Amino acid sequence: MQTLTEENYLKAIYKLSRSNANEASSTNSIANELTTKAASVTDMLKKLAEKKLINYVKYHGVSLTEKGRLIAIKILRRHRLWEYFLVEKLSFSWDEVHDVAEELEHVNSDLLTDRLDDFLGHPKFDPHGDPIPDKDGNITQRSGIQLSALAVGESGKVIGVRDSSSEFLSYLNEIDIALGIEIKILNKIDFDNSLMIEYNNQKINISHQIAKNIYLK
Amino acid sequence: MQTLTEENYLKAIYKLSRSNANEASSTNSIANELTTKAASVTDMLKKLAEKKLINYVKYHGVSLTEKGRLIAIKILRRHRLWEYFLVEKLSFSWDEVHDVAEELEHVNSDLLTDRLDDFLGHPKFDPHGDPIPDKDGNITQRSGIQLSALAVGESGKVIGVRDSSSEFLSYLNEIDIALGIEIKILNKIDFDNSLMIEYNNQKINISHQIAKNIYLK
DNA sequence: AAATATTTTTAGACAAACCTAAAAATATAA
DNA sequence: TTATATTTTTAGGTTTGTCTAAAAATATTT
Ligand SMILES: [Mn+2]
Ligand SMILES: [Mn+2]
Ligand SMILES: [Mn+2]
Ligand SMILES: [Mn+2]
Image 1 (cartoon, rainbow over the protein chains, first blue to last red):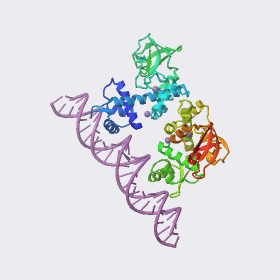
Image 2 (cartoon, rainbow over the protein chains, first blue to last red; image 1 turned 60 degrees about the horizontal axis):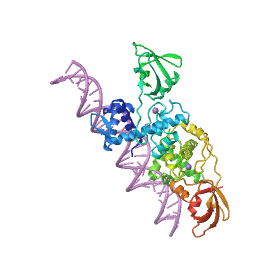
Image 3 (tube, chains in turn yellow, orange, brown, red; image 1 turned 180 degrees about the horizontal axis):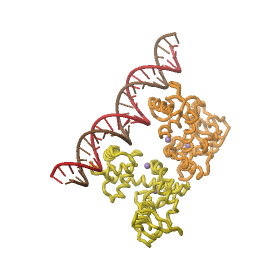
Image 4 (cartoon, chains in turn cyan, yellow, blue, red; image 1 turned 120 degrees about the vertical axis):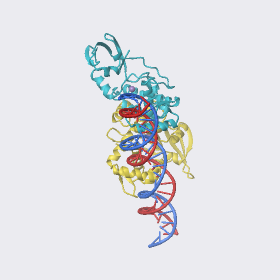
């Protein structure tokens, strides 16, 4: 059994391994992800290595063991199921769910997780378009493309976001972008890499930073 | 803001004050309730007094301040709402919910609590017949009488239990006693204070200990 | 009212998770 | 290939909540 803190570390390492093409994650990147200090991370890495949850080579970063990966995925499953629950059953908006799910994910009961999954009808994606791992840890990988990667004239439907912070999602709410919206690229501004886009009969300019965080299909 | 541990202490003190006619609770009784040691309790009492959540007189026990009472009731509200959710929506049985609710009660979000309450239709009692405090902390006190307090020949309907441990509830499940069951006292055995009771066309003998933990109306 | 028993508090430690500052290792630049 | 910069680890502390053993206070007997 692992503590809440250990679970958060495992999840962070998993997340980093996803975005860094499965390379070993550095101490600093983990500290950054968890807004803590490198020295604290080193302490925890020793403990997780001791428990055989990570492969830790001093000065050369870490990767999850199979055991660690399964735990990380289990926490991710809980997180996303709760987010789905909050939006679908308790009428939370997609920018209100993250922090609460961050706590709910640590309530440790397989019976609870699986009954919740049943109750929700085995949803495949959370409110941000992220895939929900199934009971056995299988994940249907999302096949989206970043809005920033589309060419001028192309268009697609929003299927997810890369950043689930309430700051980012509130902004999307403000400009009326949500899952399912059809967006067309009108123009790309070389000066700052921003994009003119059109959707719902409105035309607006969004930054490259924003565009990178929206997935289309 | 208070820690999970502080919340559990406040809840324990509240519970003890209920069962001990509002008298100050002793260090040992709290230690016993939380299965910890008296020395640990003393440490925590100092901290809670510092935070003005309890009235603490050295060597003479503690009582909750109004501030502490409101927090205790809030945690109790969350606990019972989650228990109701687990039974009504996720088909848990009444002996499976306590430990999970013990964790869920610490997820700190008023929005979550109130939306959950809405979603469940503002239930008044949890699966064990305990009253669920409302948003403002008001509690409809249960008006039941202990099965052990009835006279021979009298009968009543089960409206709650005093002990919500899974051990006790599993036993009730085994002998088919549940909320709503009509029970009649056939006889009282002076030797060990046990009772012969009848319900659902079956007659059985239950100990005084069991009878004290069942509320009837 | 003493003597004894019980309860409570204090003293001193420990583990978990965090921190700052300094040292060591690795990576980058000259 | 040295010199410099960056990253990571170690050393030494802090806070929270726990513990055991001993001391102090309160309660119960005799
Ligand atoms: Mn978390
Ligand atoms: Mn999400
Ligand atoms: Mn609890
Ligand atoms: Mn209950």
